[in-house]
Every structure is written in structure tokens, then in C-alpha cells.
Image 1 (spheres, helix red, strand yellow):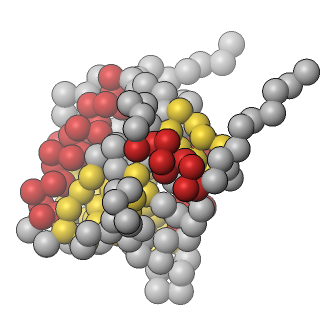
Image 2 (tube, rainbow, N blue to C red; image 1 turned 135 degrees about the vertical axis):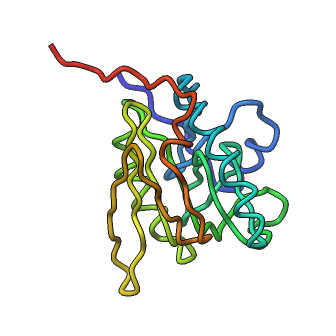
Length: 190
């Protein structure tokens, strides 16, 4: 017999999240504890924050790391990096609703959700200009750029390239992003 998942209201989730040590994402009333990350994933997150924080601040904006919660609709996620302008916070729960840039680091366990459910939810944010996926298994960055008609254009970048982050008019060197990162091994099916 399968146990039913405990469901919470948004208000209950936010109150519980305020006092916990472990972050939880919230989708359709269900809380999902955030799993630990690989070394490659953590190194890429840190490199992103270091490379983008100073550049973005010169525009009067900021970036938040993996502890910054974002609310697209009735869902709550913790992206690996989020760029925003203004306060973006709600009534003290520190939830961004006006993200301009969201970056997720892909791994075998997160890729399907990052490309599917999360992208769909993030795309509902009218403020979102770019959604970027950083691969932890190979030097590859994919940028989804919102077009004037609301559609998304995909561009991919590899070693030796730079990606122009339109949301903040910043160049991100792929080589600098992956500097010092030992990539995760690719999973091979037998």
C-alpha cells in the first residue's frame, strides 16, 4: 500500500520553511527536500556567483545563490542562481517574484525537471528574460532567451565561447565558468 503525501497550504509551507535547516521546494501542496549536490555542481554554483555578482551589481541589480527562493505561480523553487533587480521580496518570507535571470546546474538527477517542469514554471514569470542551463558533465551552457513574441530562443555554448546574458548585459566566459571544476562522469547504460 502506498502512503499518501502530506499536503500543505502555501502559508503552512512558508511558515515551516522559515524555521527549518533543510530547504524544501513546494509543488502542488507537496514539499520536496533538497538533496545534496555533487562537487562539480557546487563548484559551478560558486563560480557563477563569483563571476556574476560584481558584474550584475554594476547594473544596480543582484544575484542570489541556491538559498534564494523563487515563486513562479503557486510553486516555490530554489534555483542554483537567480538574478533580480529591486527587492523582489514578499512579506518577510524572502521569496523572489521578479527574477530576470535563472540558472540551473544540470546533473543526471535534476536534468529532466530543470528542462521540463521547472522551465515551464519559470517561464510564467513575466520578468524572466533568460533561463540558463549549465551542464555538470561536460562544458556546455544552454541559454533560453525570451523573444518579443513570448517564445524562447535556444543557443548553446561550449569551450572557448562566451554567452551574453542579455538580462544584465554581461558576458560569461565558458572557460572561466568551468575553471577548477572536475566534471561529473557521464552515466553509461550497459
